[in-house]
Image 1: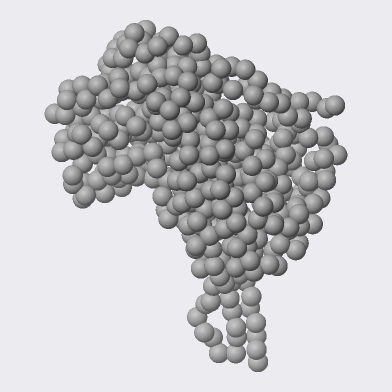
Image 2: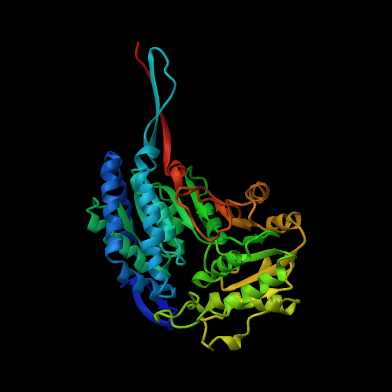
Length: 461
């Protein structure tokens, strides 16, 4: 037997299952099959691709209950929320990208010119290597997999080892749909092997979701190759509660945005700036709602806050909290209000008296903690929101549309929200700036990154 890895469930820190790492022979076979399948798949009609992708979605919906339980066991999300990943976001994103495929991929005509026919076609790139994370294993991967297949590419999926079973579920879905052999495949491999995969001439594009460090490793692996990569990286997403905000709405949504999925969301809320006229009431309401969370076994239906994915991740979050407390921050949530459970279970925390000298307000924490700062003006809020190496999403809570747009024009971010947060609208481009990455998924623009333009210039007479 070759090398293998264990999937350790955060529910009870026991080994859920084990999987073998693909051998060099298997990797070579997958690459060859993918390239061979691509040559045929790129010549199929978009309508045929749509029909098969619709069957993939059908498989997930038919098996949603079983898949949801697998998801909870692999990464710890409470079972009452797990179905959302399939019935909600996965379905919504896949169905939207299927619905717009023909329009987004159709050839583009240019102005008539006597004696000539001219148009631009969008051609697939080849084999798309999708590198998917564990925190939203289906929501993040569907952004690339379904559009890549619809655009005429073949796909190889490498999922995070923590959620490796999700890759196998995708394979089962494509097999159920009757996808031709080799169009979709997965590999269980280690990081060093991923780097070698990226360098293989058979890979035409890399879609990566993960850490900034991981994104840099992908860029380094590409090296002198003339291929592109879509990189969705970290976030330190801010929210600004303005002087005219609806406090009840802001509190309800920002608590959820901070602690859903135990704070393990790329676009989760990690820092909040509140106008001083609203500050005391906002903090009081925020703490009250946070204390209503139920920390416990995610397989129990009443649990609303499960464990973090791994012990080391929980320790990092605790280090960020301890560092802030040791330099003047104040924690408003008492551990006594939550059961004593071993790591990776971690009680939520709300910190005040924080500042931008603290790691908790500067670096991605990715856990159930949020820092709240008082600000005296819109100008101060803008300055603090932009004081970050990240730029994935940001939000404002206000009753004034014009105010929201004016401030949004000045905030450095990929998505700007008014009165909502922590959501991907598949009709809008999903993108980040600064250390939050590059490229774009979803919306009609997402197809532009999975294809290349080819111009046809025909002289007729």
